[in-house]
Length: 116
Image (cartoon, rainbow, N blue to C red; front, side, top):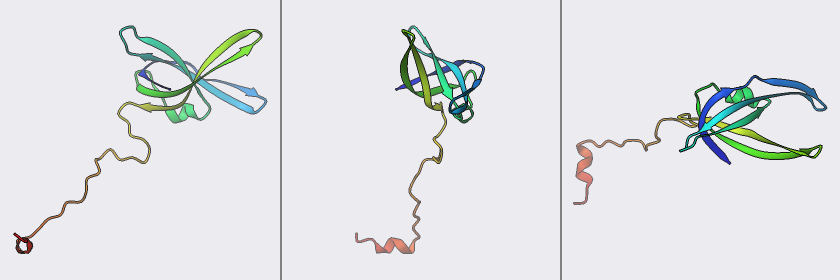
């Protein structure tokens, strides 16, 4: 699923120690434009925090997964970003220049080879 909007808040990074080692997460709030704009809190985990390098005011498209878990009879839902693209940016390895075929030029001598 993808959500497109503007980053209106970047919450502080949180880290801790778990059974699999150290973990890091940071949440950001994305405002989705509509007649009645919606706000969605999205979580980034681990190296994605540095990779996405978000700032308040960035226009982005976030590819997300939504997951709910039950704990002690209560349900908790988390929205995780697995990819975030800033508006106007090109994917890694892509060129912003259009890819046109090479230009072929002809000289005066070449014009006599035409069949008509």
